[in-house]
Image (cartoon, rainbow, N blue to C red; front, side):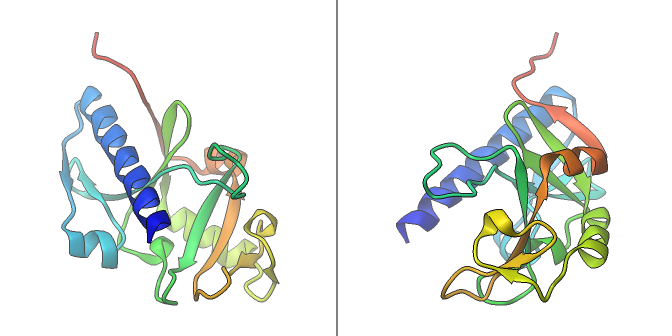
Length: 166
């Protein structure tokens, strides 16, 4: 439970940084309901036609103190075996990196999973799950990773962080 609280807080802080960055650029946003956040996997309506799921950086190893900007974790199934965030209602994902958020169209990520990930090749550690899948011990989740360089090529837009209006 302690880890859940820590990751929940970290995710909320990423969402606050995302909203702050949006406001600098003049984008309007509205927070999702708890139901939509948890069950439909989206966090904000941005300029009101687009649902965005904000993702904070993740650590690929428990030994690492800092998150990795080298890979993005894609959740195919959640811890209960239900649809993961990649199959939720979000139109875009906003992946937080060190200095900016990368926006990627959900349909592009789904297409990459459908055409590039071997769903039968289940590996023993998340760091080895590029084009393969990984399930944590005692859970029903299913995830894969995508290198940051690939995410940048797929990106629809980049939103800089820590920028002030001139």
